[in-house]
Image 1 (cartoon, rainbow, N blue to C red):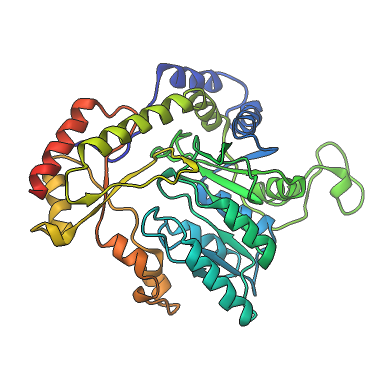
Image 2 (cartoon, rainbow, N blue to C red; image 1 turned 60 degrees about the vertical axis):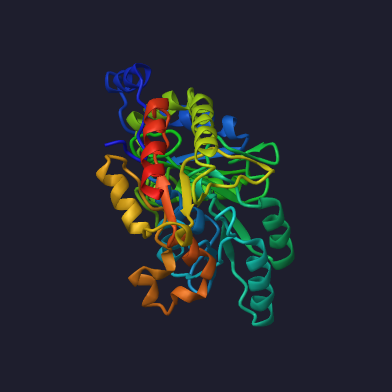
Length: 385
């Protein structure tokens, strides 16, 4: 089976992990700080905080921004459920913005219309979470200017987009947002086994996220209620979480970071091959925006079902029968049972439903060979003929 995604682990990665295992610290040691510093420098951000997952990073981002009961958070329905769940964890209300039919990211036209209606009804969001689907940045400059007009904060869900660029800035620089998060899952651009990252240029948000990452506990006497009892003393001053990452994970992430540009270059090469070899087939390939340097976490095709004699499921199943591990990204969040129980209707976001009914994710990962790409294209061509 050719999987849709796969990590690339080198001997250097293995040795980096072994060195930590042989050291005095395997959990909260110096490598976590080294990894955070390296990520911040790479993304051109002031602060980077490593956590246990991308979901944890989203949750901490919402908490750091003070999201709670009475607040509303908006995000894309074309994402993994974590992009919405992070708001619900905080007691906030969630809502969605339909997608652009070409980029599969948040539609700016839909966002502008929804904001205007929300202002008229005095129901503006506290936070918007744009999702950089498949590794392509949303139109962050426009979203930022809208935030200045309408007064909302911005969390970039860049789980797919580490290594990408927007307007000549690295995604993660937080030029147009309060916080950016990344995922370190094995399917993503680099991996730490599991893990996530929260980046910001705001020192107060960074301090709050650090506090919440470790149970809300501080050893800083200046933050304590009363005097410290001694060097052993700590106080819990917030209700936080155990969202820490280990030195073992950080060592793998730090080693992988050294090859990130190489990884992105190969993904872009694979995408270019797909674009060239699939252009005669009845499908729509991903369309990069001119302001983006796409990192290509996913390569999603949209089938022209009116031009082929098969359903999406039949195409999907046939590719799987030929040992091609295609996938679908994503089932729109608003049609999940948990969200339909809140009153969301499928027809409320027609663009994402049209996209979902025709979408198939083809394999794309660093070690995917040219021969395997040729095989995927050949089988897909046969199936769609």
